[in-house]
Image (cartoon, rainbow over all chains, first blue to last red):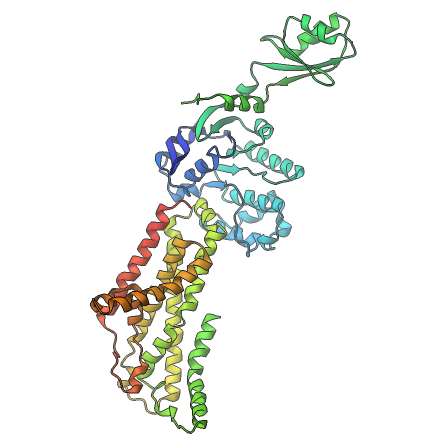
Length: 301
Length: 244
């Protein structure tokens, strides 16, 4: 798989603050790459450097193996932080201006507007748009040139649940088309649902980089409930039980390696207990994310 | 709007002065304004070029608003993300300045021709055309000043502050000029704004029978050109170096 983005020792220093420290990462074609990290970890600064608006203090990067000029940026659709458009111009006019800069055909405009469902409001001034519409226009603009890579920085910022779901669907559709997407987000369960790989930044350092699939491997958590008074004691007798926690309506059993929900199910059934609630939960990205952040030092080179 | 004001202002200037003269008439003094060759060829070239030079402030404010809006609304950031280079961005603003300066020069030139034809008692070619060199000088004057405004806008990035600084820069230069005048008067023509003003010197004193410079000097043009280049170059450097 070809490398779409690679950075070598990318660093940005603002006076005494090192916002991004010696960042090395690679994104390959077709990946949906999540950039995670607490506020202030350097995500937007990194994206700013990659998109030519922030000058790197040290290090280098390349898109598609080519030197980073403004021309390669035309093949990338990016929305950083907030949507930015000319407020006194209409959505349509803003997209036309952008098409001119990106050297994209004007015929693409109706298509992208259709995709984000803004066709009816295209002739209204941008300042009259609601936040959701502004976000949607931003996504439309990022798709304008049918880019090879899409960069979305907090695309669901400030949206209501329906808006978040809509954006998730749009992203999934785009990912299914084979586009490479770099997604910076705080919504970890969204990232877990959509992304193939992820990186964690903390105070400018890369703490972790790897596939999302690896997160679920290993530990399994089984939630179980049954109409039985001593369920807790019974569970402790199960060979595969690790830590057992009691929640309000059920027990959470951390399974030992090699044991799965169905083993616990059979075990209980053999004892004459029928579980009323049995769910296997894979380790969440949120959990691993918090674990990674709790570690003191960067683990990735 | 600006051009409308410019055109109307220049054309009606003559009528306004006539009306003024009539006013003064009422006080017992009588000045026959028609005899002062304000709108006559060839004086009109310099007179009009100088007077309309005062209006370049209006254009400058437009330029300042145009560039500071890009910072305020952050559209400059998105444009660069989209694939515009910083050079292209600056060039678009510089071309606009050139266009504004050219359009200014052409409109004032047309007004000059028309009103000159109306008010000149006699037209004596080619004498009537002496001093026409003030119009290219006027173009340079406007473009230099707009370049200055663009540069200040790029450094300060906020519209109100930039306009204040623009107005103050005249004041500051005036203060420095007055202080230096006793010591090194020779370097005064090298100051940025002074050099711009020197392109078309104040013509009206000749009507009070004073000698004035009524031709464009190469020296003033050269200095103004250097400053213009410097303004645009500094703007480019600032744009390149800063994080947007």
